[in-house]
Length: 69
Image 1 (tube, rainbow, N blue to C red):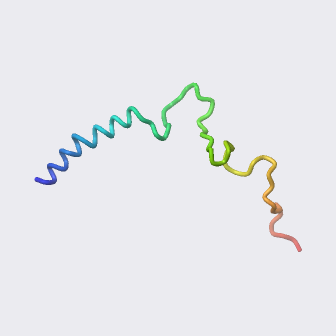
Image 2 (cartoon, rainbow, N blue to C red):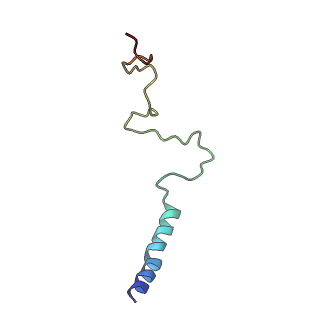
Image 3 (tube, rainbow, N blue to C red):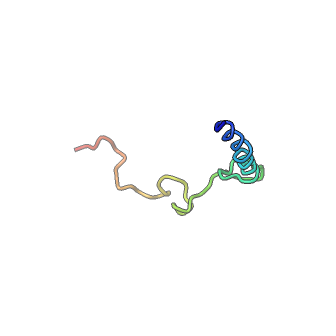
């Protein structure tokens, strides 16, 4: 009986909330936007740059490997 009550509660409460949230809210921004130039989302953490070193930045290492003595 308890299992049936949990199933009915899930189907009548949790499932409709999930369906409404899926229709109304898109947290991953997966919807198709035909007017979008790009789907890239710049992060505020890196100041709007894509990942990786900024153009012209050096890491302080030589590109030659293995190092020569």
